[in-house]
Length: 466
Image (spheres, rainbow, N blue to C red):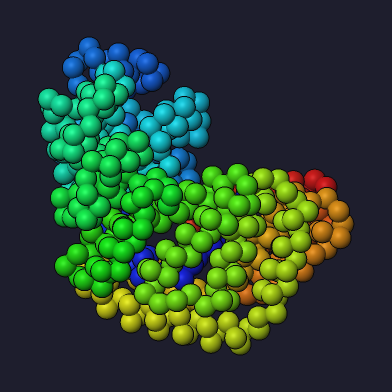
């Protein structure tokens, strides 16, 4: 069922990311490979497409998508049928499509560590990864990346060969730098090679212009010796417009590393360490200390996720009650004031963003969202608590508590996903008529917003059967 994502207050980081992703979020429809122009996709299994690649001596272009991914659909509608795109890809690649959530796609996505969509992989006939592109930046960007993949396929010293050299014990700094750079380029970081490089090179050179992309691109944990130096570098270049791209690369790397540590924590002690690193990261990115209240909010969010992941429902319930009551205590007037203040800060920080980006439809949509971001955060967090209770809890007292949360969240925001959560809880509480009315509203709003109505239609049908 639909869930509502939460927004955080690291607006400058989001703005920097927006510069690089401004063309990624539009909706469209899939493309049929039977069209006379455009990319012609191979039909068959994964082993079969690799065999065909060997036969034709071409790399494989792999479009890894999901059915719910808007940018995936845009790329399928806009780029795949394009004649010039077809000419380039049909001449240089065997093209293949994989749904990351179905059949062989699950294993292929796991093998190549695909976590975002669309991801374009360029793979040799032996299955070795040659090049990777995450996202879709329009036809010109796709053509440019294809040229890079073609060049990478002709590289006389590919990553697969360097893997063998590293496994054979090669550890000189020049080799490690080149190896890390290629690993970063294909999105397959090597923490072992990074640690070897950090040993081979003086710390003062870890964040030099020659090394920083390779180091940042292979950071996988905040426990790495490179984490603190990279954070320090963020402080130095954070507001330097000339180094914005480098700043974005570093911030993305350290954010992903800290987030990965939280997601992979197995004990509360490991979680506490990961949270401390995340707080340090947030303070560095914002350029000022984080208030005690914000620190507590971030800590609670992390612990809720941890308790849910480790199936510790008693502790989840205990903390959820505290968090939920605090959210309920925030008045509507207070939220409106917060929305206004946050939006003003956002607009002030937007002055760092190029005018070309600010003129884009994507930025306009983002700015509109930021006008009520604080209200959306509260409603989104209430939705997260309420939906978890719907899925995990069976005690009537728990369902009653969740309904208190969901009632408040739909007062604040009547998005389809939130209405659906409230409807499902009403149904679980035996309030069938109210549940059906609420789900009908969710379905109507989803259709009006251009969302896929299938989940809402299914939920409505199930409620009507009860």
